[in-house]
Image (tube, rainbow, N blue to C red; front, side, top):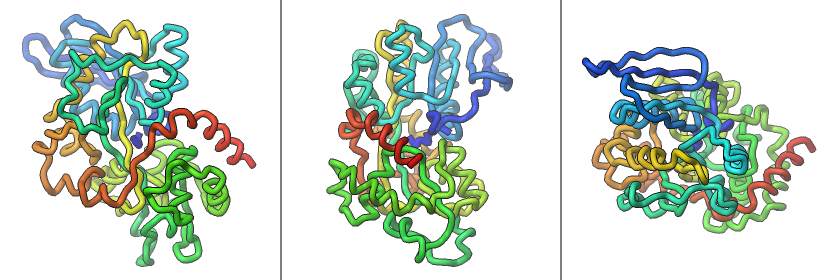
Length: 365
C-alpha cells in the first residue's frame, strides 16, 4: 500500500498539522501548516474523526480526494496521523485507549487483525460494498486501492545499459550491476526471492521459507540500503544512490510526473490492496463507517487515481472517471495485472509474526 504506504512506519512519514477552516458565510477554505498531526476542521461544531494512513504522496492523495471533502461536507474535525501498525491497533483494543478511529492497513495486517478479533465488522447498512471488486471485500475491512510492489530503476543512472526486467535479473548483479535496495521486511521479499530462484508465480504459496531465505542470502551483501518507508525508496532511486529497488508503483509514478526518470517493471510484481478498517470496540465507529462509505464512492476514487496517485480503484465504477491513458499506468489495468501475482493475505495473516522474527534474526546474522 505500498504503500506506499512514507507510509506505515513503512509507508509512514513525519507528522504535520493541516488545518482547513471553512467560513460559515462564504464557504471558503483557509489552509494553515504547523507542527503536529494533520488536522481538518470547520467552523461548524461537530465530532472528531482520527484517521491513520501511510503518509507521503499516498496520504496526500487521500487528503485531497477524500479526507478534506468529507470534513467540509459534514462539518467535522479530522485529525490525521501516519504510521499504522497492527501491533499498535492491538494495544489500543486491549487497553480500550483509541488513538485512531479509521485505519488504512495492508492486507496481511487485516488478516492478522481478523484472526485476533482486533477489528470491527464493516457495517454494511452504512457502507455500500456492492460496487467493489470482490477481492476488495472482507468481513472487517473494505479495500480502498490496488497497489504494486516491483522492481524499479533509475533509467538515467543506468547510462544506456540494459535494465533488469525481472527479479531473476535483480539478483544477477554481474549482468545487471549497480547498487540495490529492498524493503526491510519479510513479506514480498520472500516471494521475490522465490521468483528469482525460478519458482512460477502460481506456485509461490505456500512459501518455501527455507528456500526463500537461502536465496535472500545470495543478494544480502549487495543491498546497500534496506529502505523503511515510501519516501526513502523514492529518494534513493531519485538521487541514484541506488540504481534498482523494490518500490511501490504509485510512488514511482508521482516521481515520473515530476520529471524523474524512474521506471516500474510490472513483470513479477506483487499486487496487493490497502483497506479501511476500524479498531474493535471503537466508540466512534459510527462516524468511522460513514467516512469509509464516503471514501469508497466511485467518483471520489476516480478523482484520487486520475489526479493524485496511480493506484488502482476498488470501486469498479471508478474507471468511468479515469481516462484510458491514465488507466494504463494503474496496477489493476489488465495488461499490467496479468504480469503480476496477488499477495496472499490469508497465508501471511498467521505467519506474519513468526516470519518477522526470523527476518530480524536473519538481518543481524
